[in-house]
Length: 164
Image (tube, rainbow, N blue to C red; front, top):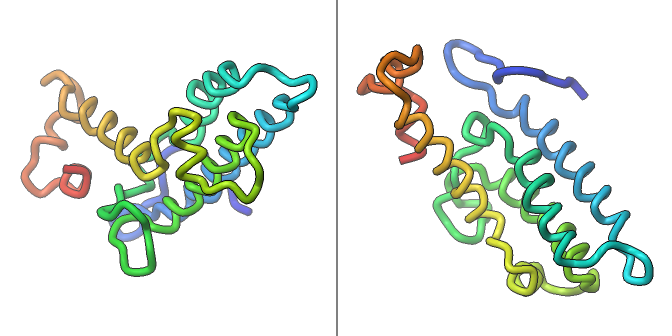
Protein backbone atom coordinates (compact mmCIF):
# COMPACT_ATOMS: atom_id res chain seq x y z
CA UNK A 1 0.00 0.00 0.00
CA UNK A 2 1.35 3.40 -0.96
CA UNK A 3 1.67 5.87 1.90
CA UNK A 4 1.27 9.56 1.33
CA UNK A 5 2.51 12.22 3.67
CA UNK A 6 1.46 15.79 3.05
CA UNK A 7 -1.23 17.19 0.80
CA UNK A 8 -3.16 14.93 -1.57
CA UNK A 9 -1.85 14.29 -5.03
CA UNK A 10 -3.09 16.48 -7.89
CA UNK A 11 -3.79 15.03 -11.31
CA UNK A 12 -4.62 17.54 -14.08
CA UNK A 13 -5.30 20.22 -11.48
CA UNK A 14 -7.81 18.08 -9.56
CA UNK A 15 -7.35 16.44 -6.19
CA UNK A 16 -7.00 12.69 -6.07
CA UNK A 17 -8.62 11.93 -2.68
CA UNK A 18 -8.42 8.16 -2.99
CA UNK A 19 -4.73 8.34 -2.12
CA UNK A 20 -5.43 9.62 1.42
CA UNK A 21 -8.36 7.31 2.21
CA UNK A 22 -6.50 4.04 2.91
CA UNK A 23 -4.06 5.79 5.24
CA UNK A 24 -6.83 7.48 7.23
CA UNK A 25 -8.84 4.28 7.60
CA UNK A 26 -5.67 2.40 8.54
CA UNK A 27 -4.83 4.98 11.23
CA UNK A 28 -8.37 4.89 12.56
CA UNK A 29 -8.37 1.10 12.72
CA UNK A 30 -5.06 1.13 14.55
CA UNK A 31 -6.26 3.58 17.19
CA UNK A 32 -9.62 1.90 17.72
CA UNK A 33 -8.02 -1.54 18.14
CA UNK A 34 -5.52 -0.12 20.63
CA UNK A 35 -8.36 1.42 22.61
CA UNK A 36 -10.25 -1.86 22.38
CA UNK A 37 -7.26 -3.71 23.85
CA UNK A 38 -7.25 -1.70 27.06
CA UNK A 39 -10.99 -1.97 27.71
CA UNK A 40 -11.58 -5.40 29.13
CA UNK A 41 -14.55 -5.75 31.50
CA UNK A 42 -12.56 -7.53 34.19
CA UNK A 43 -9.42 -5.39 34.33
CA UNK A 44 -9.65 -2.54 31.78
CA UNK A 45 -10.15 1.18 32.22
CA UNK A 46 -13.55 2.64 33.02
CA UNK A 47 -15.99 3.39 30.14
CA UNK A 48 -16.04 7.15 30.78
CA UNK A 49 -12.27 7.28 30.25
CA UNK A 50 -12.55 5.12 27.15
CA UNK A 51 -15.07 7.58 25.73
CA UNK A 52 -12.77 10.52 26.48
CA UNK A 53 -9.86 8.67 24.87
CA UNK A 54 -11.91 7.85 21.78
CA UNK A 55 -13.18 11.42 21.37
CA UNK A 56 -9.86 13.13 22.07
CA UNK A 57 -7.45 10.75 20.30
CA UNK A 58 -9.06 8.33 17.86
CA UNK A 59 -11.53 10.67 16.17
CA UNK A 60 -9.13 13.58 15.54
CA UNK A 61 -6.37 11.26 14.34
CA UNK A 62 -8.73 9.48 11.98
CA UNK A 63 -10.51 12.56 10.68
CA UNK A 64 -7.41 14.77 10.39
CA UNK A 65 -7.60 16.83 7.17
CA UNK A 66 -10.92 15.22 6.26
CA UNK A 67 -11.86 18.35 4.34
CA UNK A 68 -9.18 17.42 1.78
CA UNK A 69 -10.24 13.85 1.06
CA UNK A 70 -13.93 13.58 1.93
CA UNK A 71 -17.10 15.35 0.91
CA UNK A 72 -19.92 15.42 3.46
CA UNK A 73 -22.68 12.99 2.54
CA UNK A 74 -26.03 14.47 1.63
CA UNK A 75 -28.10 11.66 3.14
CA UNK A 76 -28.28 10.29 6.66
CA UNK A 77 -27.69 6.66 5.67
CA UNK A 78 -25.13 6.34 2.86
CA UNK A 79 -26.17 3.92 0.18
CA UNK A 80 -25.22 3.14 -3.41
CA UNK A 81 -27.08 6.19 -4.79
CA UNK A 82 -26.09 8.73 -2.15
CA UNK A 83 -23.99 11.75 -2.98
CA UNK A 84 -20.76 12.62 -1.21
CA UNK A 85 -18.21 10.12 0.00
CA UNK A 86 -20.43 7.13 0.74
CA UNK A 87 -17.58 4.60 0.90
CA UNK A 88 -15.67 6.71 3.42
CA UNK A 89 -18.78 7.19 5.50
CA UNK A 90 -19.51 3.46 5.62
CA UNK A 91 -15.92 2.66 6.63
CA UNK A 92 -15.95 5.33 9.32
CA UNK A 93 -19.29 3.98 10.55
CA UNK A 94 -17.68 0.55 10.96
CA UNK A 95 -14.76 2.12 12.87
CA UNK A 96 -17.10 4.02 15.13
CA UNK A 97 -19.14 0.89 15.77
CA UNK A 98 -15.97 -0.86 16.96
CA UNK A 99 -15.15 2.13 19.15
CA UNK A 100 -18.61 2.26 20.70
CA UNK A 101 -18.49 -1.47 21.41
CA UNK A 102 -15.29 -0.80 23.33
CA UNK A 103 -16.86 2.11 25.21
CA UNK A 104 -20.11 0.41 26.15
CA UNK A 105 -18.90 -3.18 26.34
CA UNK A 106 -21.67 -4.11 23.91
CA UNK A 107 -22.04 -7.35 22.03
CA UNK A 108 -21.03 -7.76 18.39
CA UNK A 109 -24.68 -8.18 17.44
CA UNK A 110 -25.70 -4.84 19.00
CA UNK A 111 -26.97 -2.23 16.52
CA UNK A 112 -24.50 0.60 15.99
CA UNK A 113 -27.03 3.42 16.31
CA UNK A 114 -28.06 2.11 19.73
CA UNK A 115 -24.39 1.90 20.77
CA UNK A 116 -23.83 5.49 19.59
CA UNK A 117 -26.76 6.62 21.73
CA UNK A 118 -25.59 4.70 24.79
CA UNK A 119 -22.05 6.09 24.43
CA UNK A 120 -23.38 9.65 23.89
CA UNK A 121 -21.58 9.96 20.53
CA UNK A 122 -22.73 11.57 17.31
CA UNK A 123 -23.37 9.19 14.41
CA UNK A 124 -20.44 8.91 11.98
CA UNK A 125 -22.04 10.96 9.16
CA UNK A 126 -22.69 13.81 11.60
CA UNK A 127 -19.10 13.57 12.89
CA UNK A 128 -17.85 13.92 9.31
CA UNK A 129 -20.10 16.94 8.80
CA UNK A 130 -18.91 18.42 12.10
CA UNK A 131 -15.22 18.09 11.22
CA UNK A 132 -15.80 19.46 7.68
CA UNK A 133 -17.80 22.37 9.09
CA UNK A 134 -15.01 23.11 11.56
CA UNK A 135 -12.46 23.13 8.73
CA UNK A 136 -14.53 25.40 6.49
CA UNK A 137 -15.15 27.79 9.38
CA UNK A 138 -11.42 28.04 9.99
CA UNK A 139 -10.76 28.66 6.30
CA UNK A 140 -13.41 31.38 6.03
CA UNK A 141 -12.12 33.14 9.15
CA UNK A 142 -8.54 33.48 7.87
CA UNK A 143 -7.14 37.02 8.13
CA UNK A 144 -6.73 39.04 4.95
CA UNK A 145 -2.93 38.87 5.05
CA UNK A 146 -2.96 35.06 5.03
CA UNK A 147 -1.65 33.48 1.77
CA UNK A 148 -4.80 31.38 1.28
CA UNK A 149 -7.22 34.26 1.77
CA UNK A 150 -7.18 35.38 -1.89
CA UNK A 151 -7.59 31.82 -3.15
CA UNK A 152 -10.58 31.15 -0.92
CA UNK A 153 -12.31 34.43 -1.80
CA UNK A 154 -12.32 33.70 -5.55
CA UNK A 155 -15.74 32.96 -7.02
CA UNK A 156 -14.68 29.79 -8.84
CA UNK A 157 -12.67 28.16 -6.06
CA UNK A 158 -13.00 24.38 -5.89
CA UNK A 159 -12.50 24.10 -2.13
CA UNK A 160 -15.58 25.78 -0.71
CA UNK A 161 -18.66 24.93 -2.84
CA UNK A 162 -19.05 21.30 -1.83
CA UNK A 163 -18.72 22.15 1.85
CA UNK A 164 -21.23 25.00 1.88
